[in-house]
Amino acid sequence: MANIAEELLATLKELLSHDMKSFKWHLTSGVEGFERIPKAELENADRHDIVDKMLQNYGPDGAVEITVAMLKKINQNQLAEELQSKHCENHTHYTLFDHRENVIILMRMIQLKSYSLFKCRESNVAEITFTT
Image (cartoon, rainbow, N blue to C red; front, side, top):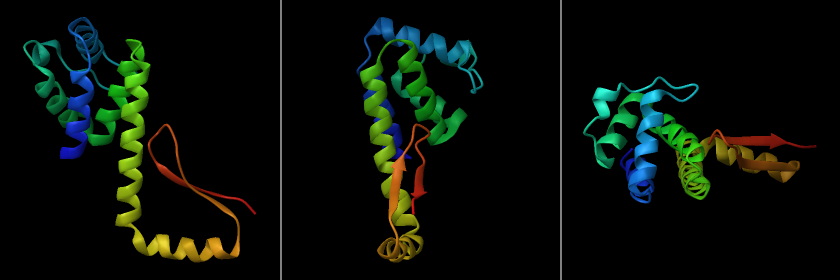
């Protein structure tokens, strides 16, 4: 989780003060699919505190997902794409390492048929698409 926290913090450090104010406002007002964080909990929060609070409330994947959504709301699309891409790459690498037995089986299956492997989607989930 430290890596995700660092990615989130690095992303928030790219925001200027007026963008950071909008980011906090969206976080306390609520984003569809996520419970809002009460204003009092972020009143004097700096970027580090905001990252910690998002991880605590939404978990690692949820914190990335809500950050990407809020960055898009404040027209920081490039930052949103960069964060999503980094997170997707890290998530896929972790999944491959964590499930190496399944990867070996899939590699054997690939030798027999044509497959599209590990397409990273907007939901940041590695997926296997089977094509025959």
